[in-house]
Image 1: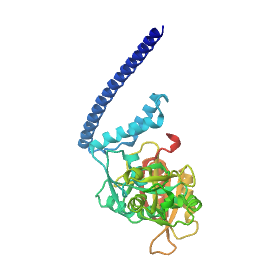
Image 2: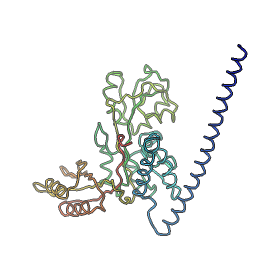
Image 3: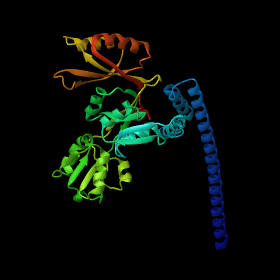
Image 4: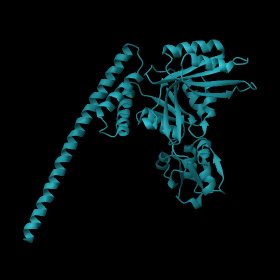
Length: 376
């Protein structure tokens, strides 16, 4: 009797093993099909690149890409996880697009900064990334044509505008090509992973501000050191056992650091908006944003005149920010973000009207809006 039971168990194990092997064989066959289709897609993308070159057309078509995502998400019917599906096809689409012309992207370095992460989220892993020492350098590199694109932080949901980026728009002639929003989670890291070893906490000024309360509560006697970027802070922590850094998850792997505490930001939902800068703005995709840099006439009601034009044209103003003009006391330029593309009639007409009312007017670009975390 016992012998029969054991034989039955052995047979059941063998059957389950055969079923697993059969299912794995199916997965291998599916993977081979996917690989073959990816090769075919890449070949088609290269052919489209040749046709665009012959017709002198732009390589990037935001409307076409948006239509692809919309179709895939609709056909998916919420079966495959939505965020993962979009991430997979984003990498496929960007890889195929970059096969037509490889992108070189400048960012605030070194590697593993949040700007680096934002660049990878936007351009995928196939682009070439060039770390620079300052946001100013990123703008200069793009303006001089040494890189096609740059990616720079422009505002944070907690700390507000990144003024160094806004000021660079006043100095350099570049255009905004896109935007990306990155959910920010800050980690306290050091070589040992022991908080007792930390005598100084280094990071960029924005992350330090975003973790101010946590640092005061848990490390009240430890001074903070603002540096150029979170990547620089991570490098310092890797070279000095008594320095802790507020850095990204990528920095932990890149610089072989240990996590002391994860997620030390004071507020959840901390998000930074980054802008992609280049030499020309893309075509409309139907869900766009337009940015302007304007100066007001020196007369009463000048700002009200601007707002009246936007109201009359039924243009949604998403952001307005003032910055002082260097070397001119009490003189300011204003950054405006409007919902819509310059090719739309009301946006084009509104911009023409504004240009006649402003002492200074510059169109910084029209570009696709990024998906917010709730859209994914």
